[in-house]
Amino acid sequence: MSTDAAYQTTAGGALDVHRQFYERIAESVDPRQRVDSFVVPIRSGRAWNVPAGHVCRLVTVEGPQVGDLNMWNLHNPRERFWAARTRQLQRAHISTYDRLWSTLPYLRPLATITNDSLADYGVDAEGGRVHDTLGSRCDPYVNRMLTGEDFDFHCHSNLTRAVMPYGLTEFDIHDVLNVFQCTGLNDRDEYFMKACPAQRGDFFEFFAEIDLLCALSTCPGGDLSVPLWGPDARDPLEVCRPLGVEVYRIVPEMLGGWSSPQPAEYRNNHGMRMPQWDRAGASCSPST
Image 1 (tube, rainbow, N blue to C red):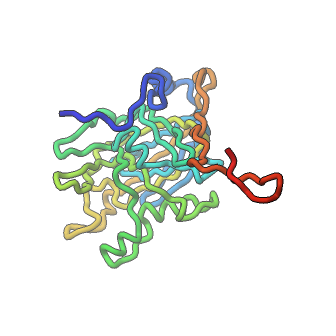
Image 2 (cartoon, rainbow, N blue to C red):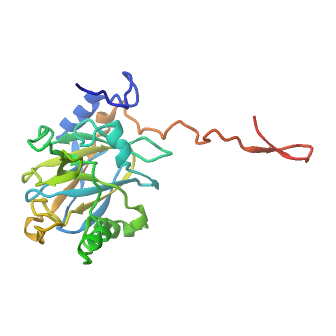
Image 3 (cartoon, rainbow, N blue to C red):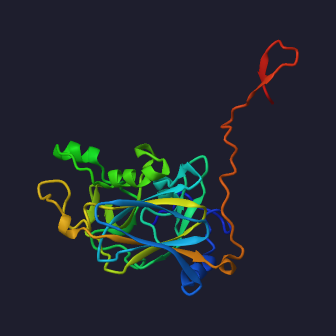
């Protein structure tokens, strides 16, 4: 028996995506102008800007490789990607037409997925799906806890180094979108990771709803076909590959009717009323 999603909306509501618009963006190959393109080497990170109304494409340029993606409002890094709420409002594994939502008190789409070469992967025999919001980034703290050894090229560290030129620190790194990563929950409700199903040239593309700062780590686990921890763990260097990043400007006529979403309308008072000075000077009383 199926169970309905907890978070639903009516037609035309906040979760009702204008699919025709994003299909038009996905198909706009010729009207695009590439404004940035680079390759993130293995076991490293890179940060870059994606202006509102632009498209960013992540590409497996040499074969299967997992990438850990962080995302912020370029002008206000307190507003950043919220993996948990995205899981609830969209899905645990996201694809075309799903949105990446921002943290409170902003709660708006940062980006919308427009194209995904793995969109038809579906659910495999073990229950694995791709583009994961279930897990987080690998980090040197867990690695030290599990192995007793230090390793400075986990995704958390790669992302930390990547955003330092933008004035951000380790405290700004947050739960990621694991692009190209295949994961699920087993029959004991434990998180598992599988080998990345992407092939050379596969891609994941999103449309920037606001001006974004993005950062991507090429996971030191590579395609995750080799265990990072446990009795069978070994250095998976041979399955590590770079990832490509491409940013495209969409011609203005393709953006007709679109505008950047505004922050949440809730006014942040949380039921509290501010004190107001009594003109008689006798006391302060809450405003009505």
